[in-house]
Amino acid sequence: MPFDAEGLARTALVRILPRTRYRLGAPNDARFTAFAPQTVRIAYRQQGAEPAFLLFSGPGQDARAAALEAARWAEANWRPSAIQRRVRPGVVVVQVAPASELLPAGPVPGAAVPAAVWTVDSESGRVEVAGRPPGSPPAGEIKRASSALARGEQPPPLGELDLAERSLMQVRTRSMPLRLSGVVGIVIVLFALRFGLSSLLGVLAYGSLIARSPVVGLVGVIANGLLVLGVLLGVGVLLNVGNLAWTLPGVSSPERRTRTLAWVGYAVVMRLLALTVSYVLPQFRTGG
Image (cartoon, rainbow, N blue to C red; front, top):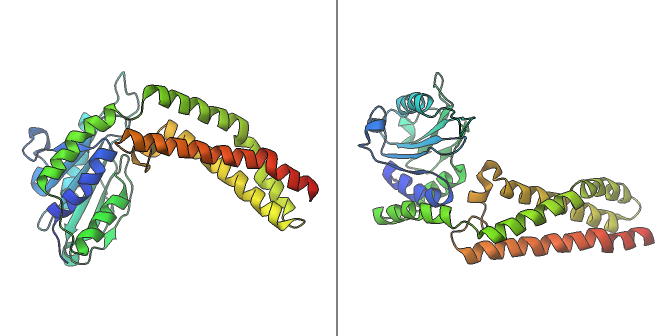
């Protein structure tokens, strides 16, 4: 079912805003007059090392011109400071139009900062994502929104979008209890020190055992590999690598109960893997 740029923007932003540091920009904001006429929705993120624009452009609007103007503004205004010494701005323009009007998806040549156009066929729902400027939103949310609208689902009302933006500050201010965050951080660091390198070596050791004892070797490779991945995931969330702390299901939930359960589940799984690697597998390996 055909849909428009406004519908896609609302459907995507109602999920993107609470999970990232993007917020809505008013079309009559004097700062954005150079590119606002070429957009139906403006979202931006100005904090951190990767400030960014997320713009939605519809039929008859020039998505490439919007990207160039937004990139020019970003380069002039989002600059390093005494507090933020490294800044890498980015611009993404999501063009929503019939296939015959879509630009080729990809990076925009000549932009002052990295910029890209992502395209969405408003008739089929097909999404083309090419180029990932700094601060890019999750492309999966654009694809999810497009698929939902193509199936005939209605976009959320304006009130729901406003609520999503108002909840942004609540999500940021009550992300995780400080005490729990500190405990999780200490546990992750201890796990990384204790099992990081040893589990990586365990993958190699049990891999060499597969020929002699296939079951023990395979279980050992899987258990050690999962432990390594678990440590990397925990460190990634702790350091917010790639904005994981705000996008990973469970730990990014606005509900404290959900976040706590996610971390408890993580701790239980990691503990079971650690017991398997440290106590269970060595007995079978010695017996084999």
